[in-house]
Length: 465
Image (cartoon, rainbow, N blue to C red; front, side):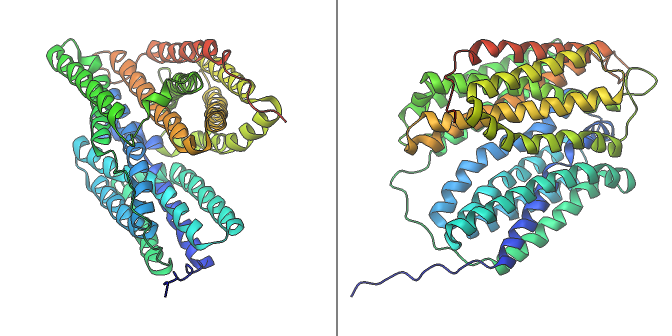
């Protein structure tokens, strides 16, 4: 007699609500650094380059964790892996809350980066326990609540840090994450493990990619100190070359590589990756420079904004970014992906060059940040969409993963370049970067983004209605 598997237990609305609560909590924990970065730099005596490193380590860890979490969730069960992943995130939040210095805070942010893998795991569980139509609604709700959580974190981090301390701005959302994880553990039904993969996970590739990215970030952070530490910087560059070469060799031989380099050789893929990298470099320079300029004393060329005010000024940009996905989808259907990408690049370039020329009022920075956030979202969404539709269906995950990994690298490089420019542009003993450092940063970012138009014009038009 053949045994039959019992149908999966249907997930209740309460369980979906618990997942949504977890999404809000993780979104809030993820977003507390951006509006309070100038405050953290002062309290921990960080240079702008070190502050830039702090602002990207969580994102890099998340990009590396996500494919691992998804694979393990498919193999061992989404709920089981999600609970363990959130234990790591909670530990990271507590380390960040208790951190007495920058190295410990960096460790906490690295551990917190595991939260980026929570959304894919939530989707795995939802799809196993709900019918297709209900699953789509639940996924949309959880995704929307995560975005809402990032806005909550952006607005609340400043008041908490200034009213209580920087320790509590990490501790409060971490407590919420622990509570939400407990609810998920108790309310969410267990999903059975999937079938083991015939091909093992590319752990060597993941390790070498992690080492390459970490070395690149350290090299960029130390670049302003090249005069005093040339041997250290040279050693990092040699190590970067060695890691990158070894990673390339491993990926070419791996049966299931983290990054399929053979697919990267296709024209549609390398163009999408180059465009994503250049646009994200330009965007992320502004992402780093705008809060720093808002923080500069009002007696010089800044506005003397505190962490609370900076969070308020950054909120419109976060709202604009949340609208970019739907707008990009509508635009791509009506006009094609190339038109959307070209328009987005033009908007980012214009806004960056405008900020370089005019930044004497707060509203200049707020409007510029809104335009840049919206345009960047349009570009990245259109590029992901065009990539997904230009490859075979079975290659969709690999192809879009390439673009998203490139996005993280571009973002990290841009933030580090912005931090390095501010470090170099800070006079000895001053602690305040010259206005010229901000102007140069905006001009470089605008020029890099504008140059991507040369690649965009060679894209295929994409699907139109």
